[in-house]
Amino acid sequence: MYKETKKAIKINLWIGGIILLFFVIVSMVTDQWGFFFWALWSVFLVFMITISQIRKHEKANSHKNPSG
Image 1 (cartoon, rainbow, N blue to C red):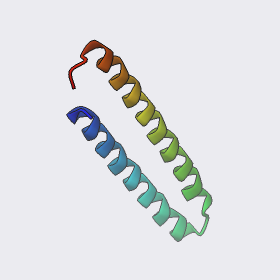
Image 2 (image 1 turned 90 degrees about the vertical axis):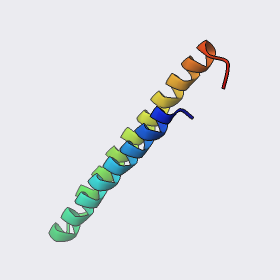
Image 3 (image 1 turned 120 degrees about the vertical axis):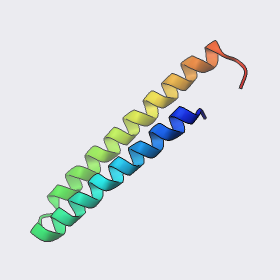
Image 4 (image 1 turned 120 degrees about the horizontal axis):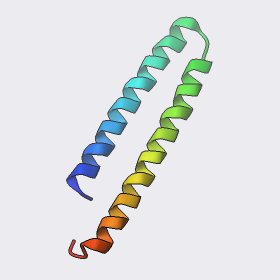
């Protein structure tokens, strides 16, 4: 895996974790867990899109640069 892709995954995980933590706190304060469940779905969706884009990018680069 490239250094940039590892960095992108780490940034994505940190931002997703912070968003989920925020919505867990909001859900605990308001006692309405719909906030957390919608945030969970959206963070999961963004994470899966990021992973697919990284794989697509790596596959395109692997055909151009066979060393590695």
